[in-house]
Image (cartoon, rainbow, N blue to C red; front, side, top):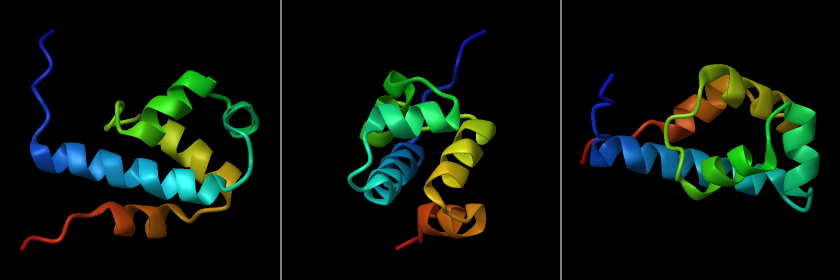
Length: 83
């Protein structure tokens, strides 16, 4: 199966998600947050740095729950507004 390349907008949305999650993590360690969400620290690192711009829904939901974020609010902040 060949994966379609991501558009610049999809990459930007992934980078925005990563920045939001990183800000919400604050001073908590990456290892602590990842373990609490049931993912690997490397997966969290990739999401936060934008190298995994389209993480699975349940991964994002687990991170949102761990970080005390609303999925609606998180999704709303990741939507790109056309210029």
